[in-house]
Every structure is written in structure tokens, then in C-alpha cells.
Image (tube, rainbow, N blue to C red):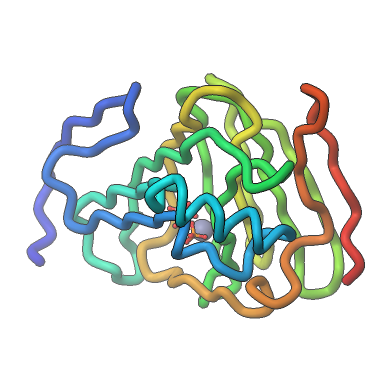
Length: 188
Ligand code: S6P
Ligand code: ZN
């Protein structure tokens, strides 16, 4: 891909980018193993017609050192059992790379952890930026009734490493119970 300046149009409400180079779609069936209540996820897949979980639209940028990847994502509202819809979460393959999330719509939490056992949680809301430092795995959680739409920028060669996340998850799970958002400690 040539390195020439360009611009792209985005729909900040739905969280879409026109003519993306890559469009990632994750449905409920892609999330097996990630939620505490596997039966509730199976029921959602069967009776809910395997609903959309989240989408990520990436701009046409080479995944090269020195470039910045730009994407916009939309995480749908909903729950699996009591647990709020969330992304899989990942480390970056190149661990020294950070990421900036600017929230454009909705409400949520960013769960972050290091391989060394540190954990952090930041709120996400329209107009709020969350900085994910190098070495921190990150997972977005939608705690509200609308799509959680975010604009992200990170080094284009960073890569995704799902590492221990599918097996261990994060040190906290986010549930909505009786209308309240609660953070549960998980046994790691
Ligand atoms: C990429 C950035 C996001 C995620 C997206 C999907 O570094 O953090 O664009 O790719 O939120 O998350 P996941 O964990 O399924 O790759
Ligand atoms: Zn990332």
C-alpha cells in the first residue's frame, strides 16, 4: 500500500468507517469461552439467532512500524446471563505499544491487566479518552443501553495477542444485577 495522505469518512453514531480496509465482525458464537455463563451464551446463540456482538472498521493503513492504525468500533448492548457484553480483549503482540480510545457514544468500562497481575478499570463515556499503556491487555465492556462506539489509534504493527485471556479472562467481570453495574472479582 503506498504511503500517501488520505482522508476517510466515519459515521460516529453507528460506529462505521466508509470503505474500510478490514471489517471485523464478532457474533455471539465467536465469544464461546469468554463468559462465565456458557449456558446463557448457548441460549443466546440458539434463540437469539447468534446476534452481532461487535464490529471494528479499520482504515486502509499499512501494518508497518511508524504507521498508526485508526479504527472505529461498535460494541452492542446486551448481557450473557448477568454479564455485560464485552470484547474478547487482547495484549499487543509488540508489548511496548500503547493505544488511545476515544469514546464517542454509549457507556462502558475498560478493563485492563498486565501479565504481572496488575488490574485497572476506567469508565468510558462520550467525550472521555482512555489511555492504554504498553503491556496492558484491554477489554471494553458495554454497561449501557446503546452501542458503545469508540475511535482507536495505536501503532499499526502492534498486532493482537489473546494470550492467557480466553482461559483466564480478566481479574474482574462486569455484571448488571437489579439495574446496578457491579464488578466481581474472579478467581485467577
Ligand atoms: C485494536 C483495538 C480494537 C480491538 C477491538 C476488538 O488494538 O484494541 O480495535 O481490536 O476492540 O477487540 P478484540 O479484543 O476482539 O480484538
Ligand atoms: Zn488493542
